[in-house]
Length: 48
Image (cartoon, rainbow, N blue to C red):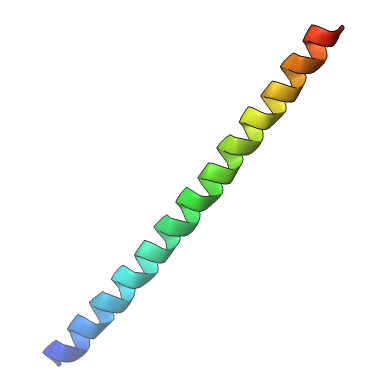
């Protein structure tokens, strides 16, 4: 019973870590995308 419970918690923890990793990864891409779009926008404005 106890071992089963521990295993369950470990699985939950792994799932949790996976979600955090995915979240951080998407966040990084999102920030990079915003930065890139801002940079292109500023370049466009400076041209005109």
